[in-house]
Length: 88
Image (cartoon, rainbow, N blue to C red):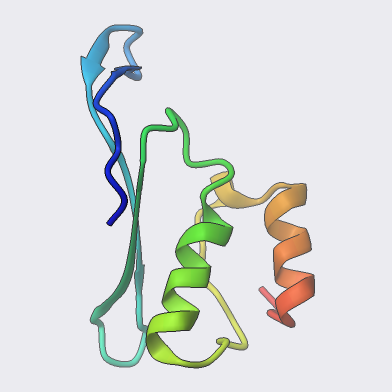
């Protein structure tokens, strides 16, 4: 993991705290965590490509389908899906 300098991050209630934003990818068949992505970005909106790339590298293949929360559905993530040949 890269060293991330600790800084204050704005929380959901508007308060500031020392925090990290963690995304995980879980293999549907084995139910095992196959990737983690840790950032200090306050929202998850643009984090899907990073955690998906780590999952692809760790399991050695591109999944045909992904099940993701709607917060990830934006132009960056949709372009990523198209580039990787992932349906939805």
